[in-house]
Amino acid sequence: MAMDKSAADAFVYAKASGMLARSFVGERAQTLFSVRTLQELWSLLFAKEVPVVPETMLAKALEQEAQNHFIAEYKKLVQNYARPEPLLISLLTFFDYDNLKELGAALCMHESAMPVVQDISPYNLIDYSKWPDIAAMTAKGPLAWYDTVPALSEQQQNDYRLDCQYIAEVWANAKAVDASCRNAVLGLLGEKFRMENVLWALRLRVYYGMGRKDVLEHLAYASGERHLRDTLVKDAVATLDWELDTYERWRSWKYHALLNPSEEGVPWMIDPRWISNSFKRLYVQKAYRLFHQFPFTACPLVCWFIVKRDELDNIRTASEMLRLHVQHTEEVFNG
Image (cartoon, rainbow, N blue to C red; front, side, top):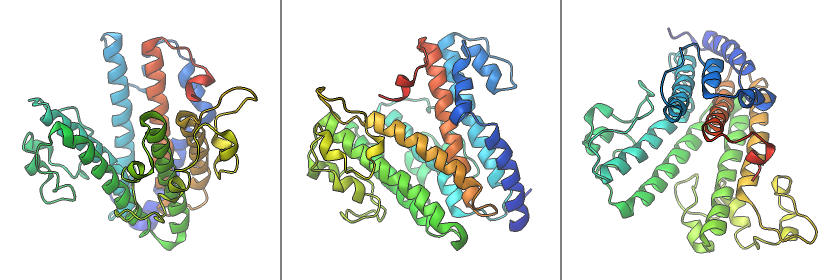
C-alpha cells in the first residue's frame, strides 16, 4: 500500500538498506563463486526447490529467476510511493526497451512465439497482450514510433534509437528530481552514461576499425541531437584521435587508473573489457557509499538499482562459469 512521501522515504530507506547488506556484491560476491554446482547456487539464492532439469536449462532458469527477483523487489520498493519519482520508473523501463529489441528481432525472423520478456507491469510501456501486432503493442506511448516489423538491415538502427531514447529519458528525469539530491544523482548517472559512450567508442575502434565520423554516429547524446560538447559524449569525443596502441598517450587520460597494465618491451593495446570491469567495480562502490549520504530522497533507490543490477550480473557470471565448468579467477573479470 502506498504511503505519504515522508513515511515512504523512511520505510524504503530502511528496507533497501537491509537488502543491500545481504547483496552479493563486493567481497560478498565471492560467495557466489565458492559454490561448486548450479544446484548449490540455486539453493544459496532462492527458497524455492531446485528444478529437476538438465544443467543447461537450470542455468537459464536460474538467471531468469534472479532477474525476476530483482525486478519484483524493485517494484515492491517503488510501489510504497503514491507518486514515485519519474526517474525511478524510467530506470525500470530499461527492461521494456530491451524487450522491444527482442520482439523486433523475433518478428523480423517471422517467429510465431513471443520471446520471453521481463515483466515490469504495471509500469510497462508495451502491451504484450497484443502480440504479434507491433503497432498495437507500442501504441500511445513513447515507443509508438516502433510500429512496423523491421527488416534485418534496420534492426541495428532501431536498437541504437532505443538506446538513445532510454538514456535521454533517464537523463531528463534525473534533472527533475528534488534539488536535495539532484547533483548526486546526476553525477552518478552521468558518470555511467559518459563511460558507456567511452567504452562504446573504444569497442567500435578496436573491434570494428571505425573512424571518428562513424563513431560519432553511434554515441548516445543527452539531448538526442549530435553535439560534440554534449555532456554525455565529451569524454568519448576527446579520445577519438588517440592512438590505441600507445600507452604513453593514454597516461594523462582522466581515467588512466582504469587502463590495462603496460609492461616495458611488450606491445600494448587498449583493452575495453579491462576498462569496463575496472570502472564497474569502482562505480558500484561509489553507488553503495552514496546510498547512505542522501537518505529520504530518490537517491537511495537509484543507488539500490545500480548495486542490485551488479549483483544480477555477478549471479549470471557465476551461473555461466558453473555451466561451462570455468574456474573463477581474477582474470575472468579483467580481460
